[in-house]
Length: 403
Image (cartoon, rainbow, N blue to C red; front, side, top):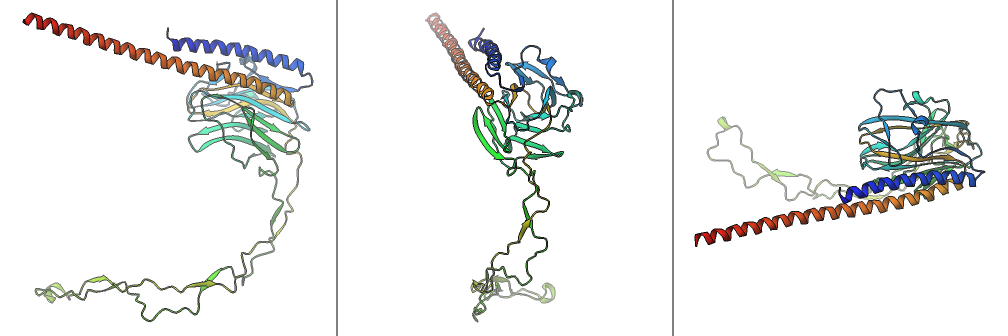
Protein backbone atom coordinates (compact mmCIF):
# COMPACT_ATOMS: atom_id res chain seq x y z
CA UNK A 1 0.00 0.00 0.00
CA UNK A 2 1.85 3.07 -1.29
CA UNK A 3 1.59 6.63 -0.07
CA UNK A 4 0.47 7.64 -3.55
CA UNK A 5 -2.33 5.06 -3.44
CA UNK A 6 -3.43 6.37 -0.06
CA UNK A 7 -3.65 9.91 -1.48
CA UNK A 8 -5.72 8.65 -4.42
CA UNK A 9 -8.21 6.89 -2.11
CA UNK A 10 -8.35 9.95 0.11
CA UNK A 11 -9.08 12.08 -2.96
CA UNK A 12 -11.95 9.77 -3.96
CA UNK A 13 -13.43 9.96 -0.47
CA UNK A 14 -13.16 13.75 -0.43
CA UNK A 15 -14.87 13.93 -3.80
CA UNK A 16 -17.82 11.91 -2.48
CA UNK A 17 -18.05 14.19 0.55
CA UNK A 18 -17.80 17.24 -1.72
CA UNK A 19 -20.59 15.84 -3.92
CA UNK A 20 -22.86 15.42 -0.90
CA UNK A 21 -22.07 18.97 0.21
CA UNK A 22 -22.84 20.33 -3.27
CA UNK A 23 -26.17 18.51 -3.40
CA UNK A 24 -27.04 19.83 0.05
CA UNK A 25 -25.98 23.34 -0.93
CA UNK A 26 -28.13 23.18 -4.06
CA UNK A 27 -31.17 22.11 -2.03
CA UNK A 28 -30.56 24.74 0.65
CA UNK A 29 -30.05 27.38 -2.02
CA UNK A 30 -33.36 26.52 -3.64
CA UNK A 31 -35.16 26.94 -0.33
CA UNK A 32 -33.46 30.27 0.34
CA UNK A 33 -34.02 31.57 -3.18
CA UNK A 34 -37.71 30.83 -3.57
CA UNK A 35 -38.03 33.18 -6.55
CA UNK A 36 -35.38 31.28 -8.55
CA UNK A 37 -36.47 29.33 -11.58
CA UNK A 38 -34.15 26.40 -12.07
CA UNK A 39 -35.28 24.73 -15.27
CA UNK A 40 -32.74 21.93 -15.05
CA UNK A 41 -30.03 20.86 -12.63
CA UNK A 42 -27.98 17.67 -12.50
CA UNK A 43 -25.20 16.74 -10.07
CA UNK A 44 -25.27 13.01 -10.92
CA UNK A 45 -26.40 11.74 -7.57
CA UNK A 46 -27.76 8.19 -7.24
CA UNK A 47 -30.15 7.18 -9.98
CA UNK A 48 -28.79 9.50 -12.65
CA UNK A 49 -29.03 6.69 -15.21
CA UNK A 50 -32.82 6.84 -14.90
CA UNK A 51 -32.84 10.59 -15.58
CA UNK A 52 -30.72 10.41 -18.73
CA UNK A 53 -31.48 8.67 -22.03
CA UNK A 54 -28.90 6.86 -24.14
CA UNK A 55 -29.39 7.55 -27.84
CA UNK A 56 -30.05 4.60 -30.12
CA UNK A 57 -29.73 6.61 -33.33
CA UNK A 58 -26.35 5.03 -34.09
CA UNK A 59 -24.85 1.65 -33.42
CA UNK A 60 -21.80 1.35 -31.20
CA UNK A 61 -22.11 4.70 -29.42
CA UNK A 62 -19.72 5.29 -26.54
CA UNK A 63 -20.82 4.73 -22.95
CA UNK A 64 -20.80 7.25 -20.11
CA UNK A 65 -19.94 5.95 -16.66
CA UNK A 66 -19.92 7.48 -13.17
CA UNK A 67 -16.59 8.99 -12.17
CA UNK A 68 -15.31 11.62 -9.72
CA UNK A 69 -18.77 12.83 -8.80
CA UNK A 70 -19.94 13.19 -12.40
CA UNK A 71 -20.01 11.09 -15.56
CA UNK A 72 -17.19 10.52 -18.01
CA UNK A 73 -16.64 9.23 -21.52
CA UNK A 74 -15.19 5.74 -21.18
CA UNK A 75 -14.28 4.48 -24.66
CA UNK A 76 -11.75 5.84 -27.14
CA UNK A 77 -12.62 6.87 -30.69
CA UNK A 78 -16.37 6.93 -30.17
CA UNK A 79 -19.41 9.08 -30.82
CA UNK A 80 -21.48 9.74 -27.70
CA UNK A 81 -25.18 10.49 -27.41
CA UNK A 82 -26.75 11.07 -24.00
CA UNK A 83 -29.53 13.48 -23.07
CA UNK A 84 -31.97 14.42 -20.33
CA UNK A 85 -35.40 15.97 -20.66
CA UNK A 86 -37.04 18.60 -18.47
CA UNK A 87 -40.26 20.60 -18.36
CA UNK A 88 -40.52 22.74 -21.49
CA UNK A 89 -40.02 26.48 -21.07
CA UNK A 90 -39.40 29.65 -23.07
CA UNK A 91 -36.68 32.18 -22.29
CA UNK A 92 -38.70 35.07 -23.73
CA UNK A 93 -38.14 38.14 -21.56
CA UNK A 94 -35.65 36.26 -19.36
CA UNK A 95 -31.91 36.16 -18.94
CA UNK A 96 -30.89 32.57 -19.61
CA UNK A 97 -27.92 30.93 -17.87
CA UNK A 98 -26.41 27.63 -19.03
CA UNK A 99 -23.61 26.29 -16.85
CA UNK A 100 -21.69 23.02 -16.44
CA UNK A 101 -18.35 21.60 -15.32
CA UNK A 102 -15.87 19.94 -17.68
CA UNK A 103 -12.67 18.15 -16.73
CA UNK A 104 -10.46 16.75 -19.50
CA UNK A 105 -8.66 14.45 -17.06
CA UNK A 106 -7.24 12.36 -19.93
CA UNK A 107 -5.27 15.29 -21.42
CA UNK A 108 -7.60 15.32 -24.42
CA UNK A 109 -6.12 15.44 -27.92
CA UNK A 110 -9.29 15.69 -29.98
CA UNK A 111 -12.87 15.79 -28.83
CA UNK A 112 -15.86 17.87 -27.80
CA UNK A 113 -16.83 19.03 -24.34
CA UNK A 114 -19.95 21.02 -25.26
CA UNK A 115 -23.67 20.67 -24.68
CA UNK A 116 -26.69 21.19 -26.89
CA UNK A 117 -30.02 22.62 -25.76
CA UNK A 118 -32.86 21.06 -27.74
CA UNK A 119 -36.58 21.79 -28.04
CA UNK A 120 -38.82 19.37 -26.18
CA UNK A 121 -39.82 17.75 -29.49
CA UNK A 122 -36.45 15.96 -29.75
CA UNK A 123 -36.66 12.38 -28.47
CA UNK A 124 -33.74 11.12 -26.42
CA UNK A 125 -33.43 7.75 -28.13
CA UNK A 126 -33.45 9.40 -31.57
CA UNK A 127 -31.05 12.26 -30.78
CA UNK A 128 -28.07 12.50 -33.13
CA UNK A 129 -25.87 15.05 -34.87
CA UNK A 130 -28.71 16.03 -37.20
CA UNK A 131 -31.23 16.71 -34.45
CA UNK A 132 -32.26 20.39 -34.52
CA UNK A 133 -31.08 22.32 -31.48
CA UNK A 134 -31.53 25.87 -30.16
CA UNK A 135 -28.12 26.53 -28.63
CA UNK A 136 -24.77 24.74 -28.64
CA UNK A 137 -22.20 25.82 -26.08
CA UNK A 138 -18.91 24.63 -24.64
CA UNK A 139 -15.27 23.75 -25.33
CA UNK A 140 -14.01 21.91 -28.39
CA UNK A 141 -10.41 20.74 -28.81
CA UNK A 142 -8.67 19.02 -31.72
CA UNK A 143 -4.90 19.40 -31.92
CA UNK A 144 -3.30 22.84 -31.83
CA UNK A 145 -5.67 24.24 -34.48
CA UNK A 146 -8.99 23.92 -32.64
CA UNK A 147 -9.08 25.10 -29.03
CA UNK A 148 -12.19 27.18 -28.71
CA UNK A 149 -15.50 27.67 -26.98
CA UNK A 150 -18.44 27.12 -29.28
CA UNK A 151 -21.33 29.57 -29.07
CA UNK A 152 -23.89 28.64 -31.71
CA UNK A 153 -27.48 29.86 -32.04
CA UNK A 154 -30.05 28.34 -34.35
CA UNK A 155 -32.40 30.59 -36.29
CA UNK A 156 -35.00 29.43 -38.82
CA UNK A 157 -33.36 26.04 -39.17
CA UNK A 158 -29.83 27.38 -39.71
CA UNK A 159 -27.01 27.29 -37.16
CA UNK A 160 -24.86 30.39 -36.68
CA UNK A 161 -21.44 30.31 -35.00
CA UNK A 162 -20.17 33.47 -33.34
CA UNK A 163 -17.64 35.45 -35.34
CA UNK A 164 -15.59 35.92 -32.19
CA UNK A 165 -12.75 33.57 -31.25
CA UNK A 166 -13.15 32.41 -27.66
CA UNK A 167 -10.34 30.25 -26.28
CA UNK A 168 -11.10 27.32 -23.99
CA UNK A 169 -9.01 25.73 -21.25
CA UNK A 170 -6.77 22.85 -22.36
CA UNK A 171 -5.35 21.51 -19.08
CA UNK A 172 -6.50 18.49 -17.05
CA UNK A 173 -8.28 20.46 -14.32
CA UNK A 174 -11.98 21.08 -13.76
CA UNK A 175 -13.42 24.21 -15.38
CA UNK A 176 -16.87 25.74 -15.12
CA UNK A 177 -18.34 27.08 -18.37
CA UNK A 178 -21.19 29.58 -18.25
CA UNK A 179 -23.22 31.10 -21.08
CA UNK A 180 -25.45 34.10 -20.39
CA UNK A 181 -28.07 35.10 -22.98
CA UNK A 182 -29.90 38.36 -22.29
CA UNK A 183 -33.17 39.83 -23.64
CA UNK A 184 -31.23 42.76 -25.13
CA UNK A 185 -29.66 40.24 -27.55
CA UNK A 186 -26.25 40.25 -25.89
CA UNK A 187 -24.35 37.25 -24.63
CA UNK A 188 -21.48 36.56 -22.26
CA UNK A 189 -19.16 33.58 -21.78
CA UNK A 190 -17.61 32.98 -18.39
CA UNK A 191 -15.00 30.39 -17.43
CA UNK A 192 -14.57 29.55 -13.76
CA UNK A 193 -16.82 32.48 -12.91
CA UNK A 194 -14.68 35.06 -14.74
CA UNK A 195 -15.87 36.83 -17.89
CA UNK A 196 -14.08 35.54 -20.97
CA UNK A 197 -15.99 37.28 -23.80
CA UNK A 198 -19.08 39.37 -24.44
CA UNK A 199 -20.91 40.15 -27.65
CA UNK A 200 -24.12 40.78 -29.55
CA UNK A 201 -26.34 38.34 -31.37
CA UNK A 202 -26.99 41.08 -33.94
CA UNK A 203 -23.39 42.12 -34.53
CA UNK A 204 -21.29 39.02 -33.76
CA UNK A 205 -23.32 36.46 -35.70
CA UNK A 206 -24.48 36.41 -39.31
CA UNK A 207 -28.10 35.81 -38.38
CA UNK A 208 -29.38 39.12 -39.70
CA UNK A 209 -28.84 40.30 -43.26
CA UNK A 210 -26.49 43.24 -43.76
CA UNK A 211 -28.09 46.62 -43.15
CA UNK A 212 -26.53 48.02 -46.32
CA UNK A 213 -25.44 46.49 -49.61
CA UNK A 214 -23.55 47.69 -52.68
CA UNK A 215 -25.85 49.58 -55.04
CA UNK A 216 -26.49 47.08 -57.88
CA UNK A 217 -27.24 50.00 -60.22
CA UNK A 218 -23.81 51.53 -59.69
CA UNK A 219 -20.47 50.46 -61.15
CA UNK A 220 -17.02 51.96 -61.48
CA UNK A 221 -16.81 54.40 -64.45
CA UNK A 222 -14.79 53.09 -67.36
CA UNK A 223 -12.57 56.19 -67.32
CA UNK A 224 -11.87 55.95 -63.60
CA UNK A 225 -8.10 56.15 -62.98
CA UNK A 226 -6.96 54.22 -59.91
CA UNK A 227 -3.23 53.88 -60.73
CA UNK A 228 -1.40 55.96 -58.13
CA UNK A 229 1.87 56.18 -60.16
CA UNK A 230 2.90 56.05 -63.79
CA UNK A 231 6.16 55.93 -65.78
CA UNK A 232 7.74 59.36 -66.13
CA UNK A 233 7.13 60.23 -69.83
CA UNK A 234 10.21 62.48 -69.82
CA UNK A 235 12.53 59.79 -68.53
CA UNK A 236 14.46 58.25 -71.43
CA UNK A 237 16.81 55.29 -71.55
CA UNK A 238 20.46 56.48 -71.80
CA UNK A 239 22.09 55.81 -75.16
CA UNK A 240 24.94 53.92 -73.50
CA UNK A 241 22.62 51.66 -71.53
CA UNK A 242 23.77 48.07 -72.04
CA UNK A 243 20.95 45.53 -72.19
CA UNK A 244 22.90 42.51 -73.47
CA UNK A 245 23.34 40.08 -70.58
CA UNK A 246 25.76 37.82 -72.52
CA UNK A 247 28.58 38.52 -74.96
CA UNK A 248 31.01 36.44 -76.99
CA UNK A 249 34.18 35.69 -75.04
CA UNK A 250 36.78 37.97 -76.70
CA UNK A 251 39.64 35.79 -75.48
CA UNK A 252 38.29 32.57 -76.87
CA UNK A 253 40.14 31.10 -79.85
CA UNK A 254 39.24 28.34 -82.19
CA UNK A 255 41.23 25.22 -81.29
CA UNK A 256 43.96 24.35 -83.80
CA UNK A 257 42.68 20.79 -84.17
CA UNK A 258 39.12 21.93 -84.84
CA UNK A 259 37.80 20.33 -88.01
CA UNK A 260 34.82 22.23 -89.40
CA UNK A 261 33.77 19.26 -91.50
CA UNK A 262 33.92 16.88 -88.57
CA UNK A 263 33.07 19.16 -85.66
CA UNK A 264 30.83 21.70 -87.35
CA UNK A 265 31.18 25.44 -87.49
CA UNK A 266 33.08 26.69 -84.45
CA UNK A 267 31.35 29.30 -82.26
CA UNK A 268 33.03 31.21 -79.49
CA UNK A 269 31.48 30.58 -76.04
CA UNK A 270 29.27 33.18 -74.33
CA UNK A 271 30.21 34.89 -71.06
CA UNK A 272 28.44 37.32 -68.70
CA UNK A 273 28.62 40.84 -70.03
CA UNK A 274 30.55 42.97 -67.49
CA UNK A 275 28.82 46.08 -68.91
CA UNK A 276 25.30 44.71 -68.46
CA UNK A 277 23.12 47.11 -66.45
CA UNK A 278 19.92 45.11 -66.34
CA UNK A 279 16.51 45.88 -67.75
CA UNK A 280 15.94 49.61 -67.98
CA UNK A 281 12.79 50.95 -66.39
CA UNK A 282 11.53 54.48 -66.41
CA UNK A 283 11.26 56.06 -62.99
CA UNK A 284 7.81 56.41 -61.45
CA UNK A 285 5.99 59.66 -60.77
CA UNK A 286 2.66 60.46 -59.14
CA UNK A 287 -0.18 60.03 -61.59
CA UNK A 288 -1.77 63.46 -62.20
CA UNK A 289 -4.96 61.70 -63.38
CA UNK A 290 -5.32 59.58 -60.22
CA UNK A 291 -8.82 59.86 -58.75
CA UNK A 292 -8.37 57.69 -55.67
CA UNK A 293 -9.85 54.33 -54.70
CA UNK A 294 -13.32 53.93 -56.11
CA UNK A 295 -15.84 53.18 -53.40
CA UNK A 296 -18.98 51.32 -54.36
CA UNK A 297 -22.01 53.34 -53.22
CA UNK A 298 -24.07 51.65 -50.52
CA UNK A 299 -27.82 51.57 -50.23
CA UNK A 300 -30.19 50.17 -47.57
CA UNK A 301 -30.62 46.44 -47.96
CA UNK A 302 -34.28 45.79 -48.88
CA UNK A 303 -33.93 42.29 -47.38
CA UNK A 304 -32.70 43.53 -44.00
CA UNK A 305 -35.14 43.05 -41.15
CA UNK A 306 -34.24 43.93 -37.59
CA UNK A 307 -35.21 41.33 -35.01
CA UNK A 308 -35.24 41.94 -31.28
CA UNK A 309 -36.19 38.33 -30.55
CA UNK A 310 -33.01 36.60 -31.73
CA UNK A 311 -32.22 35.55 -28.17
CA UNK A 312 -35.66 34.05 -27.58
CA UNK A 313 -36.81 30.48 -28.10
CA UNK A 314 -40.35 29.28 -27.52
CA UNK A 315 -39.34 25.79 -26.46
CA UNK A 316 -36.44 24.37 -24.48
CA UNK A 317 -36.97 20.83 -23.22
CA UNK A 318 -33.83 18.70 -23.46
CA UNK A 319 -30.09 18.97 -22.87
CA UNK A 320 -27.70 16.61 -24.63
CA UNK A 321 -24.10 15.50 -24.98
CA UNK A 322 -23.70 14.79 -28.69
CA UNK A 323 -19.93 14.35 -28.98
CA UNK A 324 -16.98 12.70 -30.69
CA UNK A 325 -13.84 11.91 -28.70
CA UNK A 326 -10.60 10.30 -29.82
CA UNK A 327 -9.25 9.82 -26.29
CA UNK A 328 -11.93 9.26 -23.68
CA UNK A 329 -11.95 10.37 -20.06
CA UNK A 330 -13.71 13.76 -20.04
CA UNK A 331 -15.81 14.30 -16.91
CA UNK A 332 -19.07 16.28 -16.99
CA UNK A 333 -20.93 17.50 -13.94
CA UNK A 334 -22.95 20.28 -12.29
CA UNK A 335 -25.34 21.05 -15.14
CA UNK A 336 -27.53 24.08 -14.53
CA UNK A 337 -30.11 25.90 -16.65
CA UNK A 338 -31.81 28.79 -14.90
CA UNK A 339 -32.91 32.41 -15.20
CA UNK A 340 -31.67 33.42 -11.76
CA UNK A 341 -28.25 35.04 -11.43
CA UNK A 342 -28.04 34.40 -7.67
CA UNK A 343 -28.31 30.65 -8.19
CA UNK A 344 -25.58 30.80 -10.83
CA UNK A 345 -23.24 32.76 -8.57
CA UNK A 346 -23.90 30.39 -5.69
CA UNK A 347 -22.90 27.41 -7.85
CA UNK A 348 -19.80 29.29 -9.02
CA UNK A 349 -18.72 29.79 -5.42
CA UNK A 350 -19.28 26.09 -4.80
CA UNK A 351 -17.14 25.33 -7.84
CA UNK A 352 -14.30 27.51 -6.54
CA UNK A 353 -14.21 25.40 -3.39
CA UNK A 354 -14.12 22.24 -5.51
CA UNK A 355 -11.32 23.67 -7.66
CA UNK A 356 -9.27 24.51 -4.56
CA UNK A 357 -9.79 20.98 -3.24
CA UNK A 358 -8.71 19.50 -6.57
CA UNK A 359 -5.60 21.69 -6.64
CA UNK A 360 -4.66 20.69 -3.09
CA UNK A 361 -5.24 17.00 -3.84
CA UNK A 362 -3.23 17.23 -7.05
CA UNK A 363 -0.33 18.88 -5.21
CA UNK A 364 -0.43 16.28 -2.42
CA UNK A 365 -0.48 13.46 -4.97
CA UNK A 366 2.49 14.93 -6.84
CA UNK A 367 4.45 15.33 -3.60
CA UNK A 368 3.56 11.80 -2.48
CA UNK A 369 4.63 10.38 -5.84
CA UNK A 370 7.88 12.31 -5.70
CA UNK A 371 8.57 11.08 -2.15
CA UNK A 372 7.79 7.51 -3.20
CA UNK A 373 10.17 7.76 -6.18
CA UNK A 374 12.93 9.23 -4.01
CA UNK A 375 12.45 6.49 -1.40
CA UNK A 376 12.62 3.82 -4.10
CA UNK A 377 15.76 5.40 -5.52
CA UNK A 378 17.36 5.54 -2.06
CA UNK A 379 16.45 1.89 -1.49
CA UNK A 380 18.04 0.85 -4.78
CA UNK A 381 21.17 2.86 -3.99
CA UNK A 382 21.38 1.22 -0.55
CA UNK A 383 21.10 -2.22 -2.12
CA UNK A 384 23.90 -1.27 -4.47
CA UNK A 385 26.11 -0.13 -1.58
CA UNK A 386 25.42 -3.39 0.30
CA UNK A 387 26.37 -5.38 -2.79
CA UNK A 388 29.63 -3.45 -3.17
CA UNK A 389 30.41 -4.00 0.55
CA UNK A 390 29.81 -7.75 0.26
CA UNK A 391 31.98 -7.87 -2.84
CA UNK A 392 34.77 -6.04 -0.99
CA UNK A 393 34.56 -8.50 1.93
CA UNK A 394 34.85 -11.38 -0.50
CA UNK A 395 37.94 -9.84 -2.08
CA UNK A 396 39.57 -9.44 1.37
CA UNK A 397 38.82 -13.06 2.22
CA UNK A 398 40.43 -14.28 -0.99
CA UNK A 399 43.52 -12.18 -0.31
CA UNK A 400 43.89 -13.72 3.16
CA UNK A 401 43.57 -17.22 1.76
CA UNK A 402 46.33 -16.49 -0.76
CA UNK A 403 48.63 -15.34 2.09
